[in-house]
Image 1 (cartoon, rainbow, N blue to C red):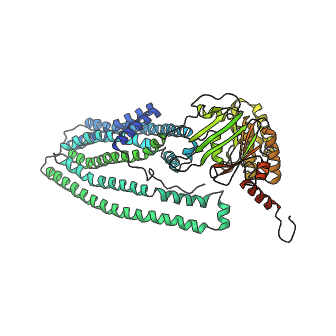
Image 2 (cartoon, rainbow, N blue to C red):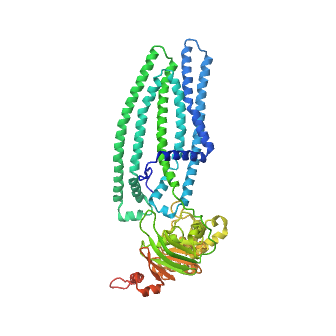
Image 3 (cartoon, rainbow, N blue to C red):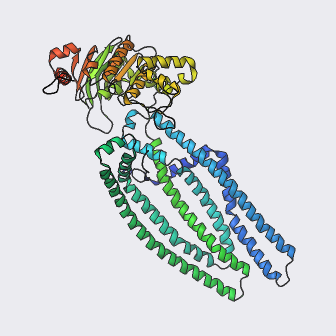
Length: 621
């Protein structure tokens, strides 16, 4: 569970959108709303616009009723006439209530459809992004910002657009009634409405800019809060006792935000008071002029009611009109998050020829790789070949490029130089998805899926979860046996036991048990290439031995690639490739590299001495 997240606008490094972008985003948002649910969009717009004419109708009927009551006192109006006007007023109230009810229901259903539509677009886009994109902080920020705004912004734009049209209808109809009281009445009332709206919009933009400046600091503060509320980090935080330090830093960011907020609030309050004072003076002037006409007998009681009630109506309408324009602008700023994410370049994993059959050879031919927006090659001129029935191990210090080789091998990345050949053919001509079906992998940071034990294994071929039935469970059990994960049978509901703490009834596993499940997931897919990235890192010595034995059995007749810092695992490979600084520095069998006496031999001897070391003055225990 994380601490509450401060809202953040578009990334602070983004330039403000151009007018052309704003119009394009507005058209795209309207299209998005229409596509989400045409029926509810039409219902919402229709009822809103019909309701916009009701204020003027209510003022007119109310005026006529008051004038009729005044004439009735003189015996000039019958009771039936009064009842007719009252019925009209009640009918307008009922109609307004009906329109409001239908409008509210349509808006709620439209909002739900919009949330689903936009969420689906975001998820669809996320599935097309390359792995490099997810490892880019800016891209990940765009994804999170787009997802955070999915629920309210598109509907906000649609609501405000309809409200703008409705405000024009209301202002025109009510203004026509007020104009009958004098040519100067409506301009004075409209003018009195402007100062408050202008100040509100001005400081709304300043508030947005303040949040924009705070984007980075807000992310840091949220991260500090998440450290204090993380179930996975709580042990270390408590043990080292750095809660006060985290709290102090978290509060320092808050105080910085608070200082900026106080300045903004003081300035806004002063300007709002000035705007209210000016508005009151203008309304007072309009009222004095109306009262002068009333004293001269030039207007009726009903006319005066139109003025009094119309003031509030016009001010609210003008405020809504101008605020709507500002609101659309601000919502479109947030919608730019969504469109910027949707406009990111994607990668079609199904593009290219379809790979058929097993993979018998893999050759890296002078392969280089450089991450986007960087000026340093992570890999430079890497060459090696591994064939069916052989195993190859990658060894090197952290950052040497081992995991990058794996990502290139599995076509998660595309090389920036050189070629990767599969059975002698350039892998670039085949669709990544079809090639990946012949590969199975356990990453060092393997997934711990908060799903059932069965799902955690069978996700390696998710289509079998719904098609194979009981036969699927047998394959899952065989994979669990190969991975030494028989503990699953002791769980409360066996394969149906939910795992992890995220959902109610979940059973948490140890790190080693999770790793065995990840190995079972690898074995479940009957692939011709197996990739093991630190396959025994979370296992004890006995479990490591059993895993290596299973690995030997499963690797027969396949290509096996191993990354490990444990030489007890690495030495089993037919070929060992030593990476240093993104280059291949040594290559050969374990015995060959030991005899050569290079960097591999030094690392091996260092690790061997560590195993052989005993406490001073006594035997090892």
